[in-house]
Amino acid sequence: HEVSAVDPAAPPAAYALRGQGLVVVDPCCGVGTLPIEAATAFPGATFLAGDVDGEVVEAARANMAHARNVCQGQGMPWPLMEVHEWDASQLPMEAGSVDVVLSDLPWGVRESPAGVRLLQGPKGSRSAPSLRKLYPTLLREVGRVLKQGSGRALLVSGARKLMWEALADPQVLATGLQLQSQRTLVIGGMHVLLFTLAKGQTG
Image (cartoon, rainbow, N blue to C red):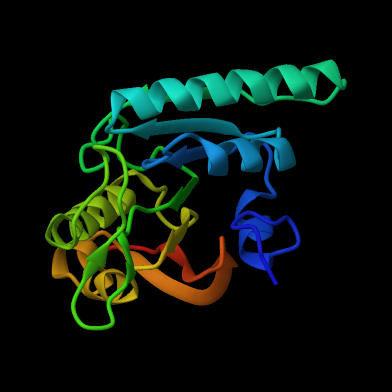
């Protein structure tokens, strides 16, 4: 059956977001679906989201405003949430300042039966070569901004091999980012993985 990437019943997400006053970052938010869904379930957190595509950021802001109005109209709490245009490989935040990174990463490839077939999408869509460059640089940034010892990352991706390669990158490992678990989800009929990462102590 279909499982939401931030289903409150899912132990990894519920564990990572159960605290109040947490700073949660989505570095590749797209139109904002994931942080908005998380915000409705965990209104005690502060959400910072962003994307490299300015048009997509405007769509995310519109979706966020709509969700906020719906929640407030029903008397439900709404957290502090900001959406920015940024480069996920150079996040505008200090090291060790983030509690949770939550993101459905770009992965571009739907299937590759006899080679790679890329999804057709907006100008922000990424090819396999660019994703191979993005993943390790993104994970290094995730490791940099997460709080040491308590930081967690919940990352959804269908590019399993690219994620595994990036997690083994020496510069990613040097940040203290460690794989805790991986779980298969079905989203929109696609089988993807939810990677739960922790920021451990560094040498």
